[in-house]
Length: 109
Length: 117
Image 1 (spheres, rainbow over the protein chains, first blue to last red):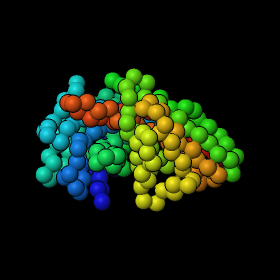
Image 2: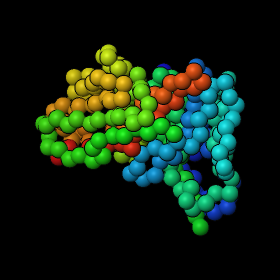
Image 3: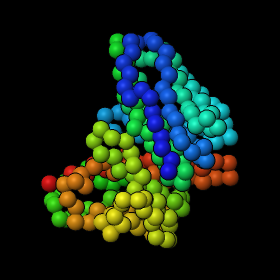
């Protein structure tokens, strides 16, 4: 059974810092991997989608990498801002999606 | 990007009643839709896969007789929580799968918050 783990569970950083969120999955037979943002009490906002044949995707200050063979993905956030404060979820697609527990990020002004 | 809607966004019902939640893909056809559940302070868990014109496939531990799924058209899937109890209170989110010759992607609805009193 596919298990998705995210480390750290919570992270607090000062504004302007670059940071890395980690995601690992146990079965490399995935269709794609996606990073989402979820604000408290809200739905999901898709950030980056990496197909299984791709190694990375970039959007603005965000960069996500995928190493399928080792079962790992990282989300890099450059020059963090208070507006980046949210829970970040990693999910792999194997038919339906399997989600990690998330990293709760707080960026302090 | 593609748009998926859910209705209602919030619902409060009494214990023992049934509640229907709709999930619609507004600008594309979706043969496959998925239903997820998120309890407070927890991540999303896949409940079931809904395929247009056929029976839904439920994840282990999800009661198919309690969570009825109907995917009668390529743009609409419904989840009915039957005989709801307080422990069914949760955030229910659907997704619709967009499929093309280039890529597949799931687009998520905004979620429905169910409170059973």
